[in-house]
Image 1 (cartoon, rainbow, N blue to C red):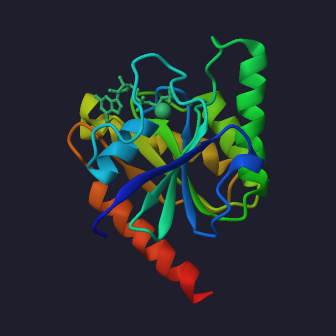
Image 2 (image 1 turned 45 degrees about the vertical axis):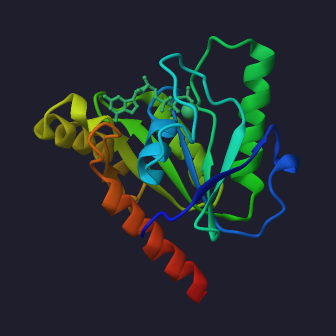
Amino acid sequence: MKIKSALFDLSAPDLESCPKSPLPEFAFIGRSNVGKSSLINMLCERKDLAKVSVTPGKTKLINFFLINGTWMLVDLPGYGYAHVGRKDRDQFNKAVADYLEHRTNIIRVFVLIDSRLPPQKIDLEFISWLGNCSVAFALIFTKTDKLSAAQVSANIELFKQSMADEWEDLPEIFTCSSKTKHGRTDILNYVTRTLAETNRI
Ligand code: GTP
Ligand code: MG
């Protein structure tokens, strides 16, 4: 897929404020600082479409971007960031939970995992929770420029083993680096394929 246009649509503080449009949505979620906003910019080949920060907790609202006028890319606030005030945190978590549980536009959720780390409890718990939301998801291991291909594979293998305890079928798995653009073609091809499948139903 060629990204011909990528336009910021709106930022929603809660489910009710999400766009009224019926367009299919691909949402990006993962631990704070895992690289969600950077990946969105890399996919769209736009430097500042989604706000990136070295400080975790940068993305605080549900941000919608209209791609090629036909689908929405959704940048979600990260989970596992404890340094915002408790009231704020609960608010964000509730907005994200409501969105994932009730938004019927979602056709795929991409769960981003830091490829540098062994399986993290917080990611496994989130995936477990997502499994009950009846939304389809895929995994993307981020920041692969930071370690060797062998180390990335080893961490993915460990993650798959951890998931196998609970899941019969494992999700589709991608790797990416927003620095080198590794993974861009594979992820966009997957989006194209998923959109085509959805349109046939
Ligand atoms: P929140 O919105 O705070 O939850 O974070 P996020 O998941 O959107 O992460 P963001 O894209 O803001 O990136 C966090 C930090 O990681 C920034 O300093 C990025 O420059 C860095 N980063 C993101 N992706 C990559 C990558 O592929 N490679 C490397 N080396 N650094 C990355
Ligand atoms: Mg972000």
